Image (cartoon, rainbow, N blue to C red; front, side, top):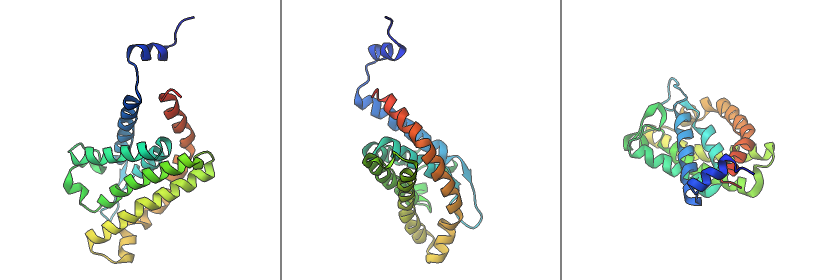
Amino acid sequence: MQPDAATLRLAVIPRTDAITNALLVLAGVLLVAGAAQIRIPLADTPVPITGQTFAVLLVGAAYGAPLGATTLIAYWLVGLAGAPVYAEGKSGWDTFVGPTGGYIVGFMLAAALTGYLAEKRWDRRFSSSLSAMLIGNVVIYVPGLLWLAHYLDTGVNDTLTAGLYPFVLGDVIKLFLAGALLPAAWAAVKRFRGR
């Protein structure tokens, strides 16, 4: 009986949990960075529509809380260090402390919470995975809107007009897409880990 390609690969390069997790973090950072470049600028707000929330919620739910949070913390740090991973290929401290920095903080929190809910088996049915991702989306908005209000020095209505209302329809679409792709993402992570 001949060994398959995966067995041969593991014989040449044994994969430890640390290596596997590092590769998953790298893949997650690249997914979120790529999704950040899917961008639609809007008039009257410094916050663009991007694919980031889709990627953040998918990574969190597929990876679980510790690895999901680690991935988004790595995304934040790589962007701070100068890699062009934020929307419009931006990076650095000035971008982070700009109007969208609170959303980046929300990404880290949402990945952890969505991952935690997935670990509690909220990812097993489409309806419950949508609920977990909706909660994660709310978690993105809380620091995002607070940060934006402080940055723009605006009241509640102007902040919601600049940072929430234009994004609701797109977020609903992204939630359904992420929920539909979650079983495949979860299976891919499980297979990559060799379990």
